[in-house]
Length: 83
Image 1 (tube, rainbow, N blue to C red):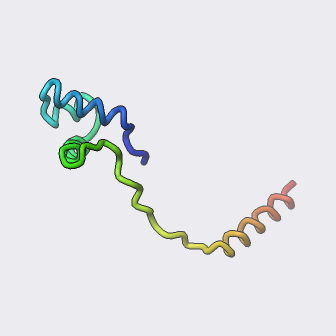
Image 2: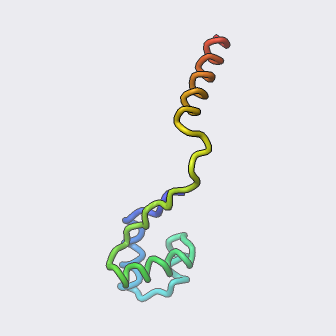
Image 3: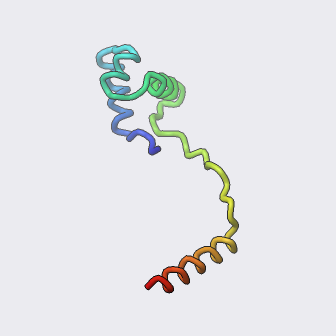
């Protein structure tokens, strides 16, 4: 899932400071979760940044580069046979 845009994040911060809306109101108004608004406001207060955290990395690949090369070669051969 892609992170929310910086523009949306800034709009939430701006609405909080302009209208002093509650986190629940902000979440409903912008169509995001309460926990997102909470984390965003805490991060903004601590760092003055609204940028998303870097991606965590995910699971390591199950195949190494050599195995991927072999798999690609086999797929290309199958495609050539089907044509």
